[in-house]
Image (cartoon, rainbow, N blue to C red; front, side, top):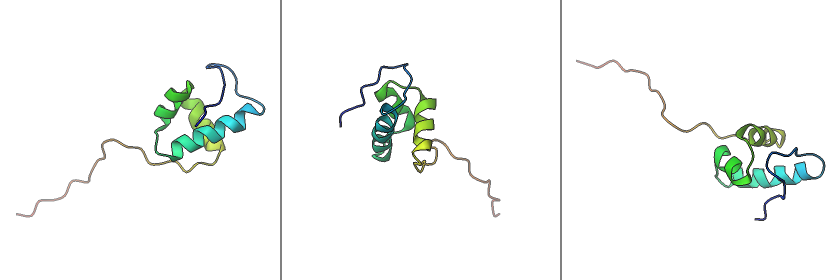
Length: 75
């Protein structure tokens, strides 16, 4: 996959935005996290999240620890 040629820190406008959005979406849908995609493309987490949202990506649930309800012990 060829990454979009966009300078880090520059605004993403015009024809570059849909191209970048397609590249980000493809990478995210292949299993990479938003943070991994952001790092690979040299963009911020917020920008990647915003562009994925504009592209109507179905976001995965967050990973990490989950809390369980305490169950009553049967004595």
